[in-house]
Length: 419
RNA sequence: GUGGGUAUAGCUCAACCGGCAGAGCAUUGGACUGUGGCUCCAAAUGUUGCGGGUUCAAGUCCCGUUACCCACCCCA
Image 1 (cartoon, rainbow, N blue to C red):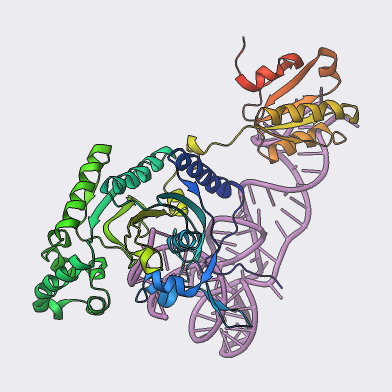
Image 2 (tube, helix red, strand yellow; image 1 turned 60 degrees about the vertical axis):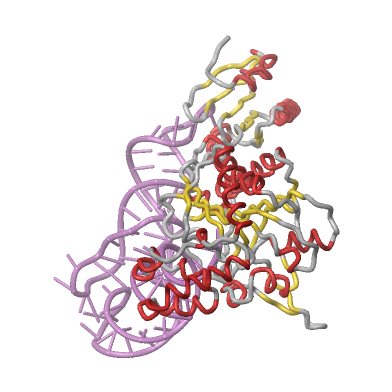
């Protein structure tokens, strides 16, 4: 009997895991520099939290959440489908003072059919800025996303921006939109007919050409904002220009989660196909109160690193790994020297593995090749006599002798340069 | 939940109208007892995803099933 991993999950190892970890590590460093500290919440919560935060009429809550019950008391839990609700729950539960800047990294779970760049267990990296309402911070959050992508070497993306106002604006807008759509209603696809009654902003997500053609002439939400939301949106755009961040307005962009207010945005990557959104987020000023906390304006985004990695070359310099050394001793009598050499290499921050000194050199070299070592270091009688290490560059097959006393500086300057 | 595609050696894939299941790479041994990746020689490798059906004969045709991929829905 053999076993498969569950649909939509992956075994991560080798280069793929290394690249993912590089993305994570650089996120911690980068956002720490901007005052964001990591928060780690449970991977499961009470299901009610997500019902309340994401919106009961969303597909995520209706079909995609993994729910389970414990035997005794019949409490219903859910694997987290996203990060924001948990962060807010934690902030409220722990009575943290405002403002707060948080970074989270971890697995999320949604029961969807997998496809390119989409899995049932997937990673998200997200940042949340809690307790700041001013439009400057909307711009900061967006700028951080942009700078982070540049930092890790991703270039080919564009930022789409929109405002979906507050419940007051949306009420007004709904009336205007309904008035416009009434004569066209029979031309809309079945999905859009349903969308309009359930969650009217979602009609703009429709991929049907006929529907989209109609919506091109529909009134835009940004033209129907209340005075405060309109002012906020304008300030966000001003600040983005102040930060030097390029963006395009997409008046038809709405977001899939119910909790957003005012600013919403997506970072889209060209040439990624159907799953082209690598970062998405927005402001959610009402959610903390909805979850039982005090009025707390917040803004944040989440990133899908799996999708991002699809857009990046394997040998991106930003993701380069450290050099690997393989120490080959010819005979057990070099054990002590071998271990000392290993520790010295580790001290320089590089990777070092040991060959079994009892094995023939041919086999040891072969194993060095097998583990993709950059260098093989050979110590045997010839080397001992001359007081050197033989350093073989495994890529070029070139070999040079390095005086033991000078090996430390060799580690720093690398191969191929002579003083 | 809906639609399409794929499944053959460890990996990538071939096998015409249904007629002996193959190649490259990888693996193992040797040419080579202090040098891998190059070259040469040799060897090993299969329930053709699984279950049924049609046929003298099925990797090939039919039905079912499972897994994976892509897209829709939705979303990071």
